[in-house]
Amino acid sequence: MSIITESDIEQYTIEELETLGFLFLHEPAIAPAGEFSERQAYRDTVLVGRLRVAIQRLNPNIPADAGEQAFREVLRVNSPELLTKNEAFYHLPVQGETKLLKRKISPCA
Image (cartoon, rainbow, N blue to C red):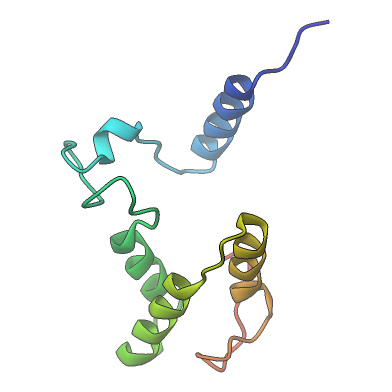
């Protein structure tokens, strides 16, 4: 019986996401000084450029100020406890109707 390691799970997940059309970039490529830098510092956990694009792509008919408000709400999710923070973030799109956009949102979009 072989032992499954964290690395095995990570590699499997990467391969599965690639089969779904996602592009995987190794961390050094998107690091602050990387070839495709997407953050100013390592402490920046949210790739804000990607978040803005995703909000617009998933909600093409909302006003720009509503998209900006949704962007700020995602960044505002904050708690000293990781589990609480993850749960709050999870409930943003899964609630079905966002308080900000007042429209139905597919959690899998």
